[in-house]
Image (tube, rainbow over all chains, first blue to last red; front, side, top):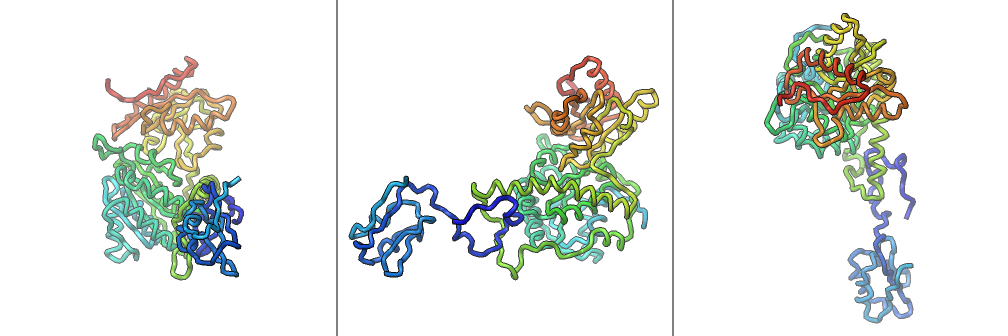
Length: 93
Length: 388
């Protein structure tokens, strides 16, 4: 995520001049557990991707899955959804 | 140039017409009503080409003004007391979204008890809304301040409230000099303003400012109103060069060698001046300082003009129940606090709910300021003219 802007840099009146800029916004600050994906166990079924309520799961080039930690809140739904236990929830340090 | 007999309210309406506004959104309320009534007449008879939006409340009036202003239109509205209070939340949006709205606020007491007469409780309750506040004492000043307001607002991108005392200024007919329309257009030219809402641009306005952003966005308003001092000074100077009347941030009367002074705001100033002039003839070194620009507060002027006096009385036409003092007194005292030596300050409240403040009351206030200086200690706030 990019550095937060200072008051001199923010467009006047809080106007957002770039459409879709909210994708740059880090919404993960309350996460206490982070999903860690084991590519070897992954069967590429996509259940984690379907169940993630935040759209935080991304698809790797090889068809396996991983997480975008800017959006992941650490709810653990992906771990529950994974039939082959390829996802482990690891406590944030 | 022509000279007309106009009420303070009509003077505002003529200024708005000559400034060639694009949008007026208004809801009637005493004692403001005749401003927007006159403007609706101007629009109806073709003298003013503007969109006149009849809204169902002041909340909607201010909301419509914010929306219209964001498209780059020059907008105006007017209100009083309950109407201003009803606009409360939108006032902060107007400044936060940096919309250069001009509003006349015809000062009236806030209910309860229901009261349509003058005091300053309405505007004082909005002092933290991020609006520039100008205060006038006559119909001519109301006209001039309204014109200046458009130019200031559009330059610093902040809303401006022009305050005129209900009935005392708003309904009193006085000779008002109206400059030629051409000269006014030269002063407040119609130009495309910073246009932020348009089908041509994909901008988002009125967005959420979460804890990571709100603080910085709010500070932009703080910075803008601080820096507006320079623009207010320039606009006033240019107004003076073009039209021959200049007002500055404060109006000083017999302050050169004064030892004692009263600080006033609005129409009370006139009576204070008459009394000061009488006392001068009796050898008393008294003066009057009237605040014309309340936001941003004229800190430098207050320090320069009051710092070396023996005693200063501050006349508030509003109260802060339960507070350590009242709104205007608090500003003057805070400003002088930073100075090592300062005059003894005495707080007065007068004229609430339209109560007349006659010359004798000012005479006694000047006397009380002198008394507290002699005693070496200020008294708790004195409620002038209050019956026990």
